[in-house]
Image (tube, rainbow, N blue to C red; front, side, top):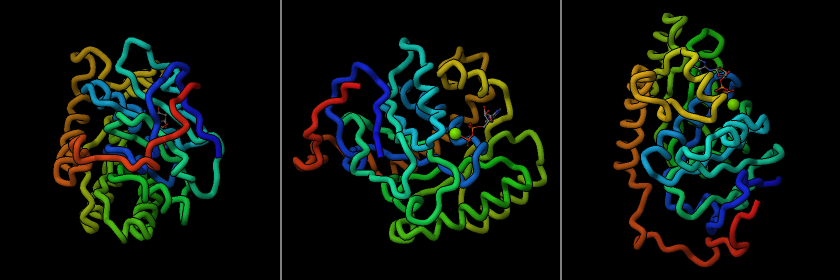
Length: 263
Ligand SMILES: Nc1ncnc2c1ncn2[C@@H]1O[C@H](COP(=O)(O)OP(=O)(O)O)[C@@H](O)[C@H]1O
Ligand SMILES: [Mg+2]
């Protein structure tokens, strides 16, 4: 497996994502096209805009998040991007390194993960977001996927907060009602719905998130994001993933000896 940083000039020590003093968010669904990249990129943009050091790991060989980062205008808040070059059955997560200052790691997962590979990704994250499109086919597949997620060893060992984000909510309202019932039965929250709008399509093309546009233009969508961020921030406060610097001393082996990323 090859880990590629996406930036030419980056000179900060990198450490294993396992050792980060950060909230590590996994954006995942078994299905492609559910909105993983849309959610990951917008989330990273939102966090960066708040002035918090953010890294975006593209774990999908399709490379959609990496493409987005490359389009991102330089004047926008910096997001450190890196990707897993080739797919492998298990992720060698100790090889995955992000800047030590990272406070939020967002991982855009590949579709179709199961078994060990899924369990490995779960292990290295604190919080899980599952974007779901409310169509009949997607809901069935997502329900099965969430079931599998809950049964991974790492989820059973330590239950991470998990939420569903309903994406492109315009159509198929009845399917969405059924999904809500299913989520309620599993006590899985769904703190935000994202509208079906070309705003997301445009933002992706331009390397931006909804948050990077003037407020008036995207007010409706910002509201959706505020609900999601409120939920994430509440989880973060409750679980205290971000430690005071003094309380977070790294052991020497946790600090990358290979020095800095020179892409
Ligand atoms: N809320 C949305 N409104 C409009 N288009 C969307 C929305 N979410 C995703 N899309 C579009 O749907 C397609 C699939 O979304 P994407 O985020 O790439 O899914 P995934 O990463 O799960 O494959 C993309 O073309 C994307 O622009
Ligand atoms: Mg994608």
